[in-house]
Image 1 (spheres, rainbow over the protein chains, first blue to last red):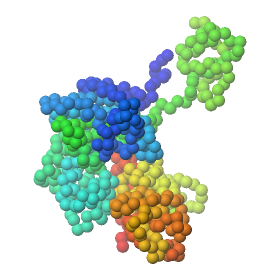
Image 2: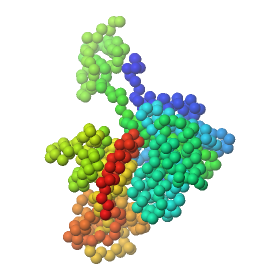
Image 3: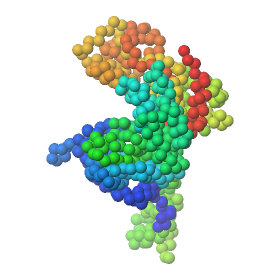
Image 4: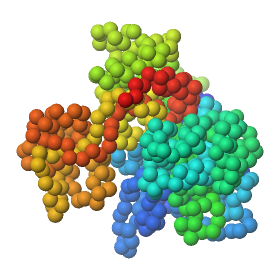
Length: 360
Length: 208
């Protein structure tokens, strides 16, 4: 069989490429079971992308869940280290409620986590790997960085009640400038409006935001973003503050990756030191996940035929001859032997057994 | 080419008028025929009419790069889209209405009939009120008249239909208007053109 004639599906190829990419940078494969105690998710409910979890009672009476998330399990099983980091990657199925159908779905997720004494190098490495992952999926991509420190500082400066502040964050995520103005009558929302309107080239966006980030936490956060984007210097890395992850879990730089052919984000990640703290850890952490199920939409090599050759035989055919004919034809492509033409089977050519020359 | 999903009906026609005035006209859209898609290669836009409640789905799933949807639909279905502009048309409000003279007995669970279950749930959860949601797809006003519900949560424009059925709005939940929305991924790759259209529409908004 010629492998070129039978390529792997695009998402399968991508998966192989991603695994080799992560291994190249010293990330070890983290294989885990499908179940986890439900309690882990109850304690960190808001961290989960969807609110539903499939649960069942194990034989010993414990309430278990089919994993809706991988990161929590990885954190649970890592130890705090002050001087180094633990690097892992995974490819696992998770079970979540799909946004559009509101039904449970098995979703293939691949990603990596870097946990421990995460420094600037580690942070840049993870973001670079996110960018390289997008390149492996499709060259027409963009990785958008946001900094929750910048967002939090500019929203806190408005001194709003918690509900209003949360509504403003939602508006930032929606690029809803009108909504921000309505929520904050009489307040100077210039900084937040700039967060919404400024997006794209890091240097341009950072320069546009600088007047609102001259001191304190806002300055420190914008400086960090400037340092990281400067070090990365990747052409497809842009800044867009509409990536507003939950600030109870995430902090610092968060990011989202898009592919032109896919109408939603395929990669999501960021620093989640606050989640680590909530789980009683002192270490820092950064990671990302790729939603592999979305890659199906990339299209690519659609099959024009189910099979190259349909080999028809009758009741008189003897098995060794049939075996020989299948062997002979399979050298030229896929072959399916049948006594009658199956409904809906699309084949490139139809051959009868007596027409096959089995002699080399 | 930027795909734009327009809501069928009077609101959609108004919205198209704004697009046209902003320089994105497509005269064939006004012809009386059965075509579904209308394109103007010069201005780089392609329009299609869809059911108003479906606009957000077309945009969220990337079949349309942009669209115009009511805030009611955005609040109810929470599509993951950008909400770029309040067009200040199609204005109405989401309100609680009941029979004229209705007294809310807070000792009882309040029966609420609505098409907008998420909005109603969120509103009453905010008040800490125990409710029984009755999901209806139409003729919501009938529910309190026939005793199916105590109140309804629905869109109120002038209040005329309510009044004709001896109902009245008792509480406004949120003001509603048409919003320009955009697909998030599409925005990443076409931000220049999408923002130019949004900017053009901004110039067409008539404020009260």
